Image (cartoon, rainbow, N blue to C red; front, side):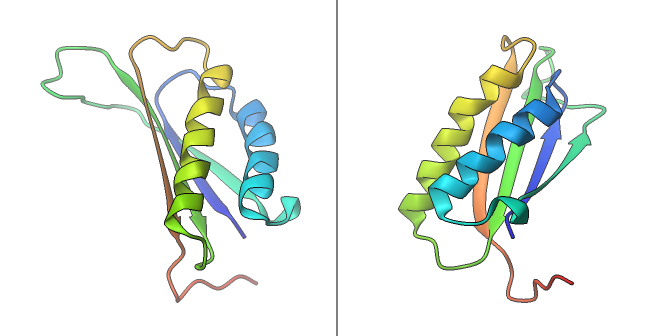
Length: 110
């Protein structure tokens, strides 16, 4: 069920990150490992602030079925932020962010 999307412009070990992320999500929000699905979208261009630096980004969005507390979602966000640097080839100038949100009521899977 967790729908995970990673937008990135930094050099990222995508497979390694996903394989480390899935058990972390399972442990934190009590879901099933085979329900975790991660897709990666490489961002071709980013502009941060006034564009005077060459900062790159990694933004992770985790969408869950409703019912988890804000505290639990915040704990998962912090854990994911802690995991990300282990899977980056360089961390200088990398802007990291994580959002954990509820899936919309219209979500269905087949």
